[in-house]
Image (cartoon, rainbow, N blue to C red):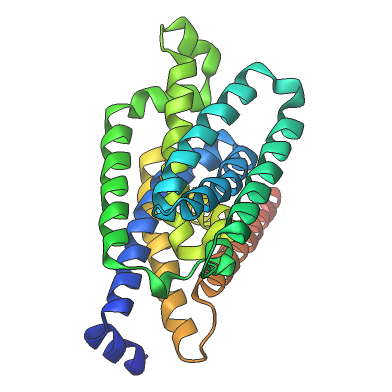
Length: 282
């Protein structure tokens, strides 16, 4: 612990890592809540894995891979959103196909890039300790954009998440609102890729929100608690992984997963205990 604090005080790479973790926690707390409530984890997974295609193409043509990630994530969100709305019977198959195609395209472009080949593992599993300052600024901007748009469209998102038919009767543009929601989730995916990579991004997007859902009584409370839990998971993951030199992303997900399991079991035991007391009450 003291060794970690010393490195945090003196080394910019660890400072960047902690900042990225906090930025990611805010985004995943807010948008992860919508993913859990709306039950669109599979759609979010399709978006996240399609992103590798855009990153590979950007790297091949000499651009920043994160810029390719933003573009491909937004395109994937719109395409998958339209598929979900208009081809519901074949939704799983089409999203699964896009998921696989995106990964394959990314791997092919990265493989064919001339010169030094980028470390594919850093994209797939993340490398939060290697994040540079310019990426911090980009993710801070994306974070601010997500918060502003969620604040402006909060009631619309709420209506679409819980009752689409009623939203249509109220004159809310369900299609555009749903696509905007998916685009914000796509931007959140780009942020989280820097922390845990493409493979584990869905876990960090959903676990803090799912854990918070056991204790929150409103959507706002769930978002706030999920953001706090995300900050705890990312920071503690950095601390735990630093000493034994473990992969930070995997450690963060392991801590988040254990916390979710503990919350699930404790909630179940508490419900059984209350049920038992209710039966004994005359």
